[in-house]
Amino acid sequence: MTRLVIVDDDAMVRTGLRLILGGESDFDIVGEAEDGLRAMEVIRDLRPDVVLLDIRMPGQDGLTTTELLRERPGPPRILVLTTFDADDMVLRALRLGADGFLLKDTPPPRMIEAVRAVAKGEPVLSPSVARQVIAAATGGSGPALPRVREELDRLTERELEVAVEVAQGRSNAEIAERLYMSVATVKANVTRIFAKLGTDNRVQVAMKVRDAGLL
Image 1 (cartoon, helix red, strand yellow):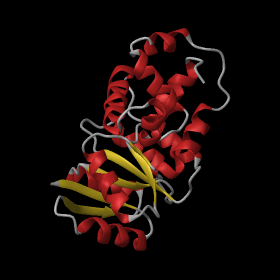
Image 2 (tube, rainbow, N blue to C red):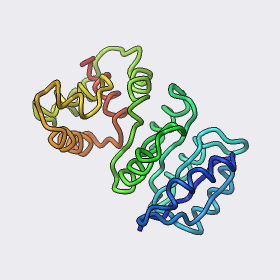
Image 3 (cartoon, rainbow, N blue to C red):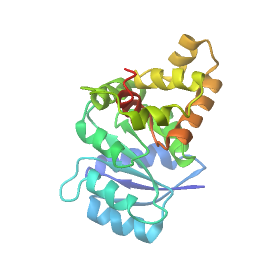
Image 4 (spheres, one colour):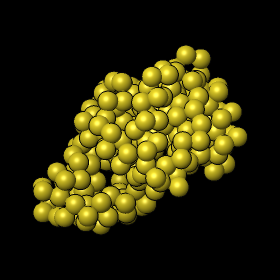
């Protein structure tokens, strides 16, 4: 059973998420909060596995909440929710350690799938916006950084190919088609890339590929 807390200043959004996720037998929605300050209290008391976190809220926003939660021992997984598909705040949240983000209008089956993935430690980026976020993260690359090149030397040739494809914003299915691999093999490669580079999401991989001068 995955314990969830929903944090959003819009009561209608909270109700909608509860309706979408509450019917799943493996989810237990243990609490809600309308802002970041209240969320810190609820999360401290209820210790959920996953927090669905609105990024734009009055008072303490999702960025500050993400940063503060990551400073706690054993923090929950954080799935950021946004209305905007190219929001710089989302990019900053990923850099602060959020496990992924989705648009609020994501279809319910995809929302359910994403929460399950994040609960298992699999970073999630909404396919419809991944390219835009990665493009923002990797824009304006400067000279290659030797330290990052050394990090990428840990990857096999195939893993490096996959990392470059990830940095170009392609989904697992697109990478599989381009590199003549199965989707399962691509997923396995991405998991190994995360482990070897010490990254938590595809944006962080993209930034390392950029800093290594490979874009």
